[in-house]
Structures are given as C-alpha cells and as structure tokens.
Length: 271
Image 1: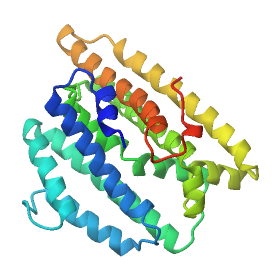
Image 2: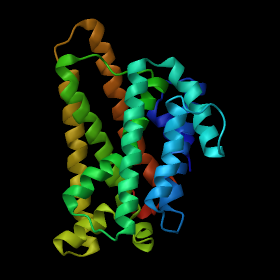
Image 3: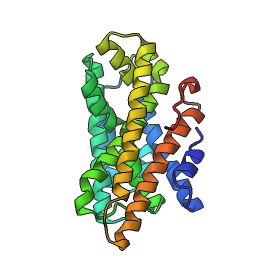
C-alpha cells in the first residue's frame, strides 16, 4: 500500500522511528476501515459498536495488551505515542476517534435500513469517517508539530483541520467510486449524481471542482493562520503545525494515486 511513502511525504523531517510509527498508524486506520468497507458483507451496527467499544477501551485505559490482534496492535501503537504527548492531546485524540466510531455506526445503521443520504448530510459524515482528524493528531507527535495554544486562533485551526479532512475524504471518493458502486456503498460522486439527477461522469467532474475549491480553502486558511500577529515564541509552533497539515494534504493527494487500493485513472492532483 506504500504507506511508508505516505509517511515520508507527510513528515519529511521525522526520524526513522517516527516515520515507521506514522506508517503503522496509517496501516492500522486502513485495517479498521477495510474491516467494514471491503469485507463484502453487510456489517451490522451492533458489530461496529462492539469493535469500537473494545478499541476505545484500549486508549482510555480499559485494556492493557490483551484482547484480539487488532486490539493488541492499537495497544502497541498507543503505548508508543500517548506517553510522549500531553493530557490535552490524549483527550483530543480520544474525542476524534470516538466521533469516528460513532459515524461508522451511523453509516452501518443507514446501510442496514437502506437509508439514502442527502448530499449535505453525506459531506458532514464523510468528514468524520475518513479518519483524517485522528491521523492529524498523530502527526502532532510524529512530525513534532503539537497543537499551538492560540486562544484567538482556535476557530481557524479547527477550520483548517476540517478542510484537510474534506480534501482527504472527497479525493478518496473520487478514486474509489467504482469499488463503492460494486459494494453498493454511498460515495460523494454517487450521492451527488443521485441528488442532482446527473450522470456519474458529470458528478465526478463536479466533485473534482468541489475538491479543488476545498484545497484552495485549505491554503487560504493556512495563510491566514501563519499571518496572525502572535509572539515570536508561538509563531514557530503555528508554522510547524500548519506545515505538518499542509504536508499531510499534499501527501494524501499523492498517495491516492500511488497506492494499489484504488483506480489510479482517477487519482487526484495537487492544486
């Protein structure tokens, strides 16, 4: 899956150990995602809840090295990451992962009940199911770019993260459309085609425009953050955080064209 390459592009200044940790977190996230998206069977909401209850136990202190292989893998990753980070970081990661778990359960429930989402609702949920926010948290550790304490810049920081998640999710949907159609899963291209009554080809073009506009939103937010008048000691922290998220967005766009998971014909190009 070339996750080592993804890690190198995402955290180019990281040590070999941190590059390995970045790639392994990405592999774990893909493993959990594939458990539901590529199992070729409908996963019931209670199965999703059961798995994520166990995984959340790992990162909230309820489990220590026991359980299934996937739980042990998360325990290993967490032990190599969390002790290096603040209590506030740990709370943020748990909150982001808990929200991902909730969104996955909602998605499973909709599939079971054959609910067809509207475009605006799909966009909001896709931001939560793409796991870009938990991965952005990991990069605070492995790229040496912790969340800067900016009371006046909190809204911009959160908007930057949301834009990064949208770019990742929408780009992923562009390249996975054929797989999603075969598995009868909702996908931004499919949902837009259904809601606007247009062909898949037209919908793909519209989603590409949406994604490219969102990349521009991300860069505008990044520029606004780095231009903020903050003390010199805080300015470097802001620069490092913005640079890490910018590298993550660029690396994601590159990786979607390099991995063998998707149809490379529809690989996104950085804007």
